[in-house]
Image (cartoon, rainbow over all chains, first blue to last red; front, side, top):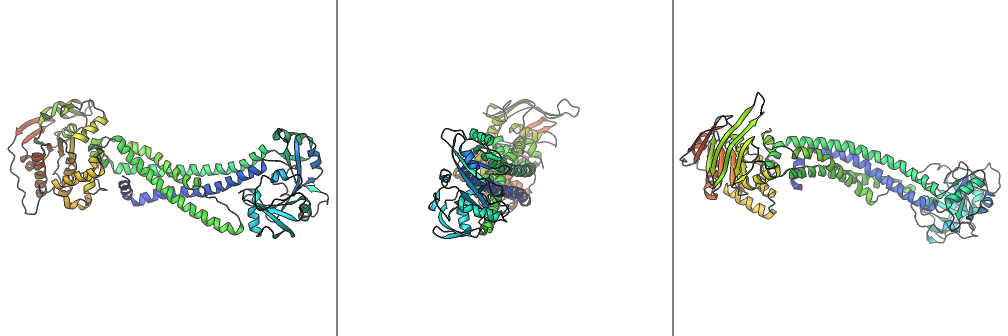
Length: 385
Length: 244
């Protein structure tokens, strides 16, 4: 059956090629964007698990990645927050860009995060250490680094790294989370403060903080607590777990909307070209259809044959497009690997999704031409030239 | 028992309009099992329409067609298709072989629609090709076969399901004399050996001459129905014709 359908497709090589090529282009785009989206989803999910287990309090106008834009407030805010009912702990944090010129990057920037270690153990325990140990209260001149940044800096447990010109002993390297924290170097608050002044030379040298991580008592609603902090503390922006999740998801949402748009265009163009090809095939083979009906083929047999042919066009375009897409993804990933950036992820969905999509598209596009073929009256179609 | 019974059979095109055409106009006809009937008549006399009505390719405006005692009147498409599949074999003037299939695959096709298993399909198709003397061309596509060979493949395809009834519409219309003779010879031999009923629409007096009964149509009616003495068949030019 499939063999015969392939022979039928081969009858009009150029037309079949062009139709399949149309699908290939759409599916190629879909695969590459799918890889981008998959990578983004990994990062978003990782980011969610980090940012939703604490409330981030940042200077008003600040964002989730507190510190990367140089905003700060006085560290006395920590004490203010600590007295609010339901707060379990408030950890002063300070963020400094590892590399000043890295103002924009795909995903999260490389950040030095200074934390009040005595207050932040609850937060840090959400990250799993891969080798070595996490930071402990009292650590000085020590750092525990996310996996990607560790790779980039060539850090080894027991070795030292330079962070903004300052040497740090590497005590631990975290397991990859595929999220923002992979590019974080955690140090103590006291160690980070001088680096912050170095990065922002014109501010008054008083203890400041660019982000305060707040944890909550058991049974306290973090959203209600966020509201309370916002109402009681001046000049801060409170990013509750739900808001953090919303912000992160929104980023992904916009991207996925674009992806959907591309898929829709692929659907429209590819689908129409399959419909066109199949309608032409049906009218070219009217006599053959009549003959088959004369010798006993039922309408649904004819219907099945043409649906299968149309699905095959979709499947072929899908396989080729996906293959080329993977090739492109692999190539681009290896090109950016030297910068320790992974732009695309290859997941099962990225591989199988576009192929299934193309096949379903082909089948759907075949419905109209196949119905036309099946409804031909045998005696009339045999008369056709 | 009559294989085919036609009762007051009519087919009207553009019914009621001024250009109304009564292609078949009240035909009563019986064809016995195992008969070899030629249907002749001038162009437009309704021969092909009659054949299509008998074979269930077309539905009559009025009247009845009985095939093996089954009235095909009012049968839905699915049931008509089933009758064609199980009881009728068609041979057409222009062969209608599927170009993407080789000779063997073309002959196997009706068996696929009968849901015969793949191995059995091939075996029976090979037997049918042997009957028409084409076992050496089984892998050839239509385009690689001569006109006579193509028509023999088409006959094999019509016979492979062992239908009670074989309907041929101008089967020799595009063949030269030698090939016409061979195709007729194949059909007559099959008629004799397998006791299948053959109804052949033809223009060719030679073909009609070999039939045992000649029905002449004019203006959609039976003009004459003459039991003939079938002439002896001798295909000239030594090279081996279909072997039986």
